[in-house]
Length: 140
Image 1 (cartoon, rainbow, N blue to C red):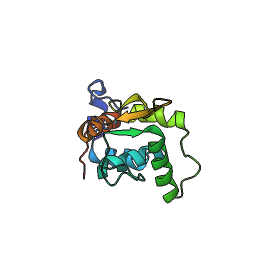
Image 2 (tube, one colour):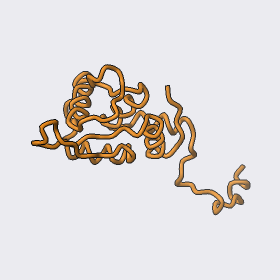
Image 3 (cartoon, helix red, strand yellow):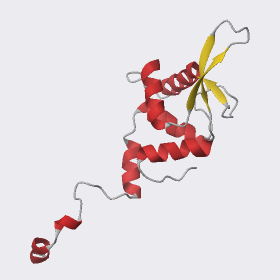
């Protein structure tokens, strides 16, 4: 064995790159930050966890309602120290789901505006998350 290891050509192998396996995916999922865990649960269940949208994923969601849903989900799990601020929430969600576009909508009276996230479809959001994780995933 010693002779084999001494003669093995390491130029063929990137020893710093972990093999992409199911165990690596499990390790990545176990080490997710709370916001990432919330987003994963949303994608797994097909609805916005902690939200009051009636079980459906709406075509457009006000960003403030997404933040509230995430905060409610975190409170339900007694996560208090790492709850995201509005700016960091938006930045993180942009990394997790780049296709989840932000649009500005006017209120009915046209006196004010609010920002919404436009749902491109659950399959596309799941593909975004899998790309962010760096490997294919199976969904419930």
